Image (cartoon, rainbow, N blue to C red):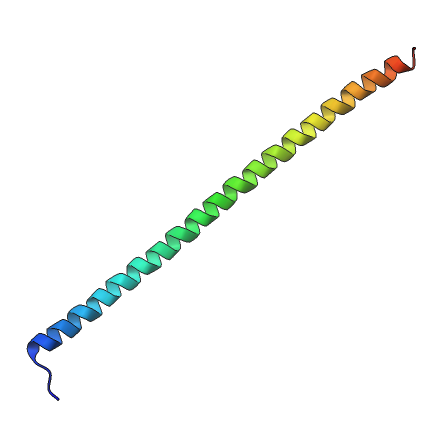
Amino acid sequence: MTLTQEQIAQINEAKATIEVLRAKQELIKKQTQADIDALYAQIQARIAQRDNDVNAIEQQILTYQSIIDQYAGQV
């Protein structure tokens, strides 16, 4: 079977379209991974900040408990 010029042109256009679609697909995958990485970094930063907040509160509790203990010894 011999292909016509029009059929060859359609095949070439289809191949070119597939290449463009694959490139778009790859870009979307990379963008999605970048979004995931950025969100993960934000989550890690929030966790670290909350850990710092918890530790700071714990230090305050210890300070106030120490004050209470000092005065309790005087009662």
